[in-house]
Image (cartoon, rainbow, N blue to C red; front, top):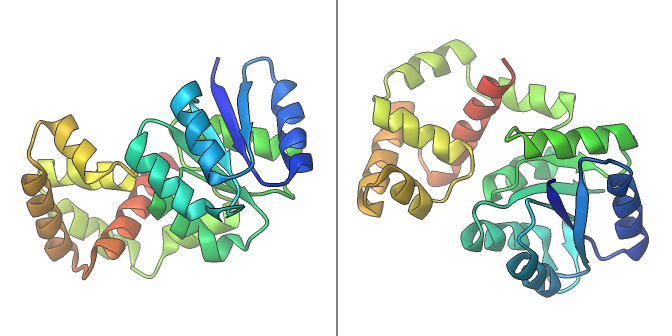
Length: 214
């Protein structure tokens, strides 16, 4: 049974999520945290499968927490549940390492759907945000032609980047050095006409989402 950690600085929100998840026979709440320090402690002690994280936390931001969890515990999935504007933060939380974003005001069934979708290894965003990201700023046909230029290894690295896997873990998973992965990243950026690691992350995330939506 998937174990879920709830990270939110509002007790009523934590209680609401815990009751909602507790009503699902296939899901289990393993802990609740009000701030970053407590969340990191529970992640180390309880090893949840998924952390539901608010962006506004006592003692730090949810984005900082996502990055720290991804660095320390890369196997833990993360879903952001927040009141902030999805159009401003969705891409940021995905780039940081989370696998989804849902507004707290969504219907309860949508929240459970988001949890299950992330647990299944997919990205969850609202339909409007998914369409916005998939469309992006690049013509889809041109983007496909660019990606077809990648070698098999480069495509493999590109997909792992889009899944939010850190460079060190990509190197370990592919049995390659970090320097070799960084070289692949440089080649990918050149072939796709990208100027920075941030642009590479965004393009890779969007490509993974497009594959998962088919």
